[in-house]
Length: 385
Image (cartoon, rainbow, N blue to C red):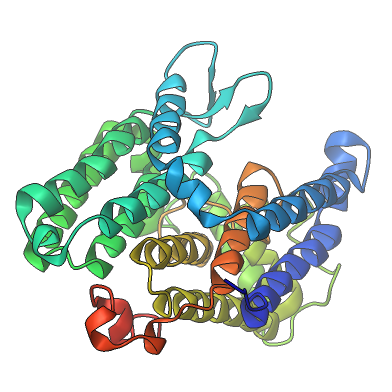
């Protein structure tokens, strides 16, 4: 089948966000680079290496047939769960800031990033192999879908990594909704998830501190609330037009992780409301086009894959921005395509490549008779916006 060109609007949104990231890291990281590594270009040089690796990953994803992931869906899912379990093994799992999220197998990486991809792929295979009547039944629809989610979430909870637990759980629940799992069952799952999140917060002191900081950030401005208070100062000082690129004051050791998790604070400080709005617009555009790409696929597997990966890229950004501006507790999730590069950055570019690959598919839903159309679901009622 002849393929059409990749979706140029989605690609431009991705390029726009990556460009903002490069500009902001170049602008904000020299101070910390000199202080920590005696090299003002330390972070931007490493980020450019990750950018090149990400471009290669995106190019591979655009060319690699999506049926490859479908063939290896179960194997990839099982492997990702095993890697998650290995973070619990002393000597292999690396604990940072009270959470054992990293795995050291000669190279250090976060298996969560691998899990995000394969759980979406496996969900796509699962939902595409089920008839609507099966999906609406508890034993053949909800129960096995819940088990696909529950097994890796168990290991996420053990790390503990509440941010990615909420992210992966939220994406999977949205995919269940899109694929017509009954609403009552989904609501039950959401209620159970809220209960588990509450228990996790109460059982882990550092998570409880983050929630307390979120609820009362001004109670301890020089202690546990220092980080978020500095973020507020950076955002507020930007005004409408910003202080100008390179003119941030908070990057001088006042705002920790200003080149990574809290880079949006500096976007607001240096670029003001205008630059911040542009960033949010590009995320909205990426979401809109990504869900449109998902909507027009006839294959339920491709629909679920495109929708799941789009939601992953966008919700990571939404959660990060929500934390930075004080609407959500701090989670440690990076700002997609903008935060200083690493495993998450390269993997995100790979996700974008897969979505662009799917966008080349010329077999659209609206070209087929209604009788031949796949199971109708909320994507076709305008969930994409």
